Image (cartoon, rainbow, N blue to C red):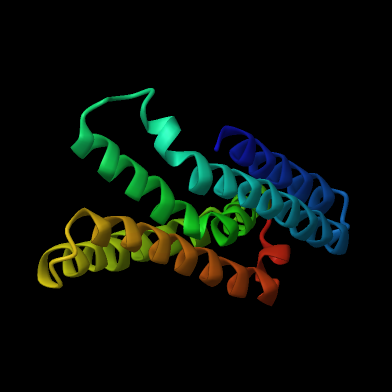
Length: 162
């Protein structure tokens, strides 16, 4: 995840620099390109986690229950990595444009009002247990990314004064 966050932060810098240079189209193009590369990177990471989860988990424990839940978590959470990789760059790009309010609001609603209630509903009410929490993470992260992408496409962030 650290290289993915590094690319997201680099995209934020590119957006800020290009807006400062009064080149909003180049700022937008930089964000979309970085988002694509981040999506590809996290897609590759996802494949590694999906295939290698059992081996990776043995580095942390040999307890069968820990291994079971750890493998399940890696496999279910990484299903959302591709769209999450795209969304993390777009969210950071808002920050680079000086618009810290938009990602704050998206995250507030996405995590507190969507992910947490969804995790509870899936895990407890639908009796999915830990798998419900893991699914909720993927679903919520993907929804947050999609919301960020839709708002970013509208382009209001180009007018935020840095």
